[in-house]
Structure formats: structure tokens, C-alpha cells
Image (cartoon, rainbow, N blue to C red; front, side, top):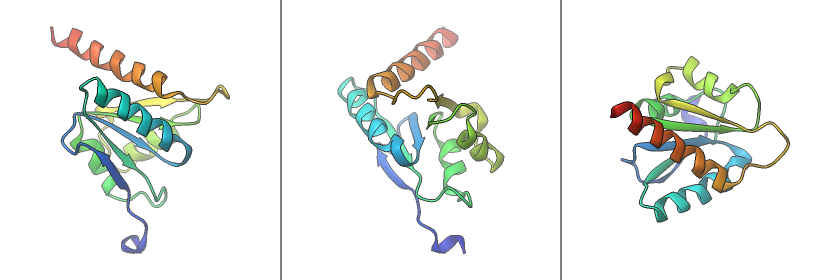
Length: 126
């Protein structure tokens, strides 16, 4: 059955250390944020889900292969991130970006979250 389900679409630089996972209306914001980050010299990749359930192996695999994955979702509880982890995703690599205040996420806000995460990683390494 899983063989017949739509596979995720991958965007960006496959070897990038920063990745995004999203579905539905997060798509445009993620692509725009990727463009902004690329212009700043920060390569990224994006795993655009096409099938949410059953969770295909490719999604947890993506989180295991990318050191920092921002799961962007329009809810307060991180349902998608938890679903990915429950199916073998690498929890230590996942950073939830939760939007639930009724205001659409802007690409600049997502870029800021990525930059803050990169800065905090640099401080930990120092």
C-alpha cells in the first residue's frame, strides 16, 4: 500500500545541515525563507510532505540525515513533529516551529528562528 502513496518532494541542497519539514500552507513560507537564507549564504533543504498518514519511512529518514530540522506547523502542540518522532525520526535533530496565534507565519520570522538556532549552536560549541 505505501508504494502507491505520493512521495515527499525535496527542495534545496540535499547535503545542507539545515532542513525544513512542512505540509500544506507552510509550503510558500518555507520556500521564501529558503531563498532568503540562500542569499545570505546558508544552504537549506526542504522535505515537502505529500502523504501525512501513514507516515512514510522517508520522513523519519530525512530527520536522521539532517542535523537540524525545523518542522513548521500551524498548531500549538507540535503534532507533526511528534508523529515523525513516533515513527523513528531523530528527536534531537527536530526543532518545532509552532504557529497558533491566528497570524500567518512570515518568511522573515522563520529565517530569524533559523539564525537564532545557528547562533545558539555556535555558543554551545565555543
